[in-house]
Length: 273
Image (cartoon, rainbow, N blue to C red):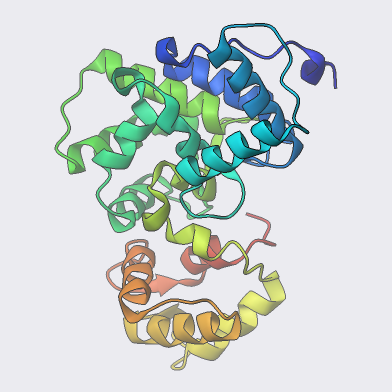
């Protein structure tokens, strides 16, 4: 595509604003999958090294010194060691005063807080909130974290999030993408990324664990479902982690009742949501 042939943005990282950071991210995340990996990562680090040297001289990716720089970079920023860089991992490069993304990691204390705020705005349980509801959603998260802000800052944060996540301009923001605002260890949705249930598989799973057939799953039923799901998919999760996942998912529930649509948002990647 023509956009990819453009010159990369200047990487004056000490002077970057959050908006400029998003522009850089979009340039190097060429396939738009939410990660910089493979050739994208190589291109980013090459430009980063060129910027740090303050010279236009090319950096040879095949050189041993460059490969060593890549190893150092990944050791510093790839916090979950998956061999690719997420937006929030890379955001550590931003200056503190401009790092709205990292601020959110500090503001949002837990994924259950995040999910409770999400439930309020995703009123039709579609897995999306409309862009015009985003300001209220962010405001609620900031209040939960006892973080002071003014209307100007809230507007700035809202516009930054829209630039980050509404990539196709349809005015909708998905839960799985917005959850990337969470620290990696709190983003329980990342743990389920490898589980891609079809609608048919999900329906069978829900029906099996909805033992009493009342149309919803309670905490005990969810506990059994998650344990079984983790065991079948060889997910290494201790009891503390499992309790955390359960609390986060139950934050989507209605008075302790987790209906089909809420759980589908978390586990089903093949739905028509």
